[in-house]
Image 1 (cartoon, rainbow, N blue to C red):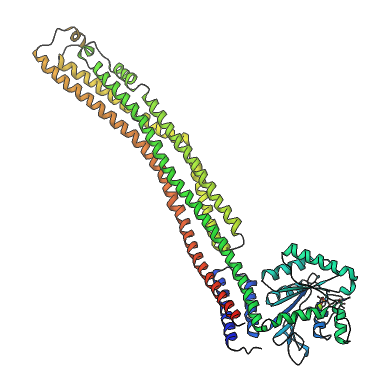
Image 2 (cartoon, rainbow, N blue to C red):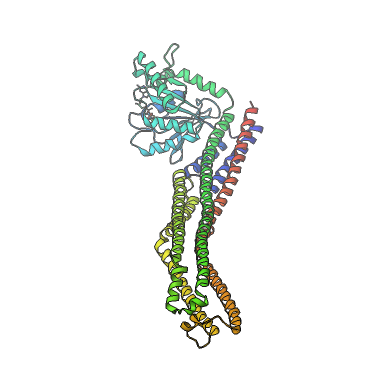
Length: 580
Ligand SMILES: Nc1nc2c(ncn2[C@@H]2O[C@H](COP(=O)(O)OP(=O)(O)OP(=O)(O)O)[C@@H](O)[C@H]2O)c(=O)[nH]1
Ligand SMILES: [Mg+2]
C-alpha cells in the first residue's frame, strides 16, 4: 500500500508538505500546543504508511475488542469483564494473518489480518475510556486524530456517558466521519432496542448537534456466528454494519479517502489557529482604538487649557484696565500744584494710591487666577482619571480575550499598559490645588507690593521735584497761598507738565510690565501642564502604539500565511475530487 501511483502519490506528497509547513509555521508563530504539534507529526507518519484507519472508540467493557473479533471472524484480541485492552491494537490488512502481535511502541501493537475490510484498510481497537485507568484513557484519546473513520461503540446496558460525549465532540471538532454502534443488544428485550436507539439519537442530536448513523449489534452473537456460520443463523446485526463499511470504502480507494480524511483534520486545525489569530487581531484593533481615544483626549485636554487660559487672561486684563483708568485720574488729581501745595505726606500718598488705584485689584486677580487653577486642576483630574479608566479597560480586554492564547506577546503589552496606568495615577495624585494657588498668589502678592512701593516712591519723589521747581526754598504751605506764578513760573509749568506726563507714562509702563508678569506666570503654569500631557503622549502612549503596530504587522503576515494554507487545502481537495 505504500506504493502509490502517479497523481495520488503526488497529492500525498503535497499534503505531507502542507502539513509540515503548517506545523513549522504554527511553531514559528509560537502558538501551537505540544499536543497539536505531535498530532500533525502522527498524521504525516500515517500518510507515509497510507492505511485507512477505522478506529473503534468507547467505554471500557462495552465490547470493542469482541466487536473487532467479530469483524475479523476470529477470536484474535483478548476480551474480558475487567478493563482489558491496554494498548492500541492496530490490525493491518494482509492476505496472510499474523496472530502474534508486534509491539511497535509503548502504546501500540500491530497485527495483520485479511478481514479488515480491504487492502489498505486497518482496524484499530483502543483501550476503553471511563475506567479507573487514566493511561487507557490517554492512549485512546491520543489516537483519535489519526482515525479516518471513527466507530463509537456504546453499550446498550449503560447510559450515555459524559466521557462518550466528550470523545464524540472531539471527533466532531477534528472533522472525523463517525458512526455509532450500540452493542450488547442481546441483553435487551426486543421492544427496548428501539427505545435505546431513539434515546441515543436524541442525546447525540441535543448535545452535539449531529445525527450520525446508529447501528444496533450483538458482538457476542456476531462472533459466535462468525465462528460457526449457519445458513439462517443470527449475525447479531453485524452484516448491516459490514455492508455499510463496504459501501463507505467502495466510494473511493482507501488511499484517496485517507488523504481526504486527513486533509479535513489538517483543515480543522488550521481553522482553529486561524480563529485564534482572528480573535487576537480583534483584541488588538479594539486595543489600538482605545489607546487612540486616550491620545485624542490628550489633545482635547490641551485645547481646553487654552480656552481656560484665555478667559483668565481676559479677567486679568479687565482688572488692569480698571487700575490704569484709576491710576491716571489719581495722578491728575494728586499731581496738581494746588494739591501739592496743600502739603502732602509720603505715607499718606502711598496709602491713597494703594486705596484708590490698587484697591481690590489684587483680590480680583487672585480670584481670576484661582478660578483658572481650579479649572485646570479639575479638568486635569477628570482627564487623568479618564486615562486610567480607559487604559484599565484595555487591560481588561487583553485579559479577557487573550487569556491562554498568546501569553508572550501580550505580557509585554500588558506590562507597558500597567506602567502607563501607574504613571497616570502618579500624575493624578501630584495635583494640589492649594499648593499651586499658594505659589502663584505668593508671587502675585510680591509683585503687587513691589509695584505699590515703587509707585509710592516715584510719586513722592515727584512731589519734591514739583515743589522745588515751583518755588525753590518755599514751604508748600506758603506756595499754596502764593499769587499767580511769574514768567519763570511758565517754564516751570511746562517742566511740570513734562514730568507729570512722564510719570503717567512710567505708571502705564510699570502697570503693563506687572500685567505681563502675571500673564507670564499663567503661561508658565499652562505650559507646565501641557508639558505633562505631551510628555505622557510621547513617553507612554507612543511606545504602546509602536508595540501595537509591530503586533499588527506580525498578525497581518500570519493572516497571509493562513490564507496561503487555506488555498493549498482547497487546491488539494480539488485535486482529490478531480480523481473521482
Ligand atoms: N452479552 C454480551 N456481552 C458482550 C457483548 N460484547 C462483549 N461482551 C462482553 O463484554 C465484556 C467486555 O468485552 P470486551 O470486548 O473486552 O470489551 P472492551 O470494550 O474491549 O473492553 P476494554 O478493552 O476494557 O475497553 C466481555 O465479557 C464480553 O464477553 C455482547 O454483545 N453481548
Ligand atoms: Mg478491549
